[in-house]
Length: 179
Image (cartoon, rainbow, N blue to C red):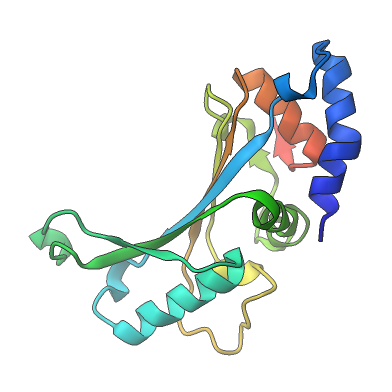
């Protein structure tokens, strides 16, 4: 599954080089990391469901996830300090490109009522943040054993200098952007 990395090196870099009029490929924007996280919500008390969420998320991202803990107790949310309230993973290198390849080519087209990623999801620094409502759109998760469905927040971080550079990078990589 080195399609996206190969595409970036062979097609995207030369295209962006000509588009921006840059002589060095090091001056071109690139994806630095992808952060995937989820909140556990109301299943915070059920240890078996927490374990299942962590396993499913680890399958999706291809590495072990880190539990995010509550910083302070909030009575209205029924959380205590130190309680697990979510899971996150930071992907870099090969795992990052593999995940993005699966996201673009498999997961997003499988999503119900998906019409493209809104360009407003890209901030002024060029980072893209999107949400996936159901984790079962990823092929690694077996839908037969799923007891509860959770959503994911995915943030793609670039080293682009501005929003336009990042937009050109995402479009040339094949992200399904809509206007």
